[in-house]
Length: 104
Image (cartoon, helix red, strand yellow):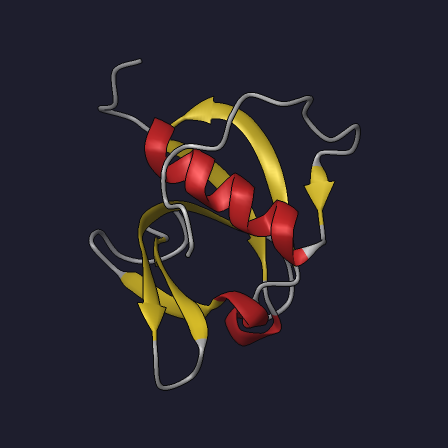
């Protein structure tokens, strides 16, 4: 069973770009829990790095994959969200910045 709780604080990857599916999922869950921004690399979004916040992570039983709901208001209009399957995300760039309006 998938544990959607915040991952334990293990040693962070040495590179700010994570590319393994397990590390991508861990960083997305951590970002959602902390309200922090991440850079998402996905051909489904186009070329480049998209700065987003993670709104939700859901299980899609039909596709046997996870749906990741991202808020990418930095690149689009306010409130614009996109939904990707975890398998569509090829990398996550770790950012130290917190999104506005979120207390630690």
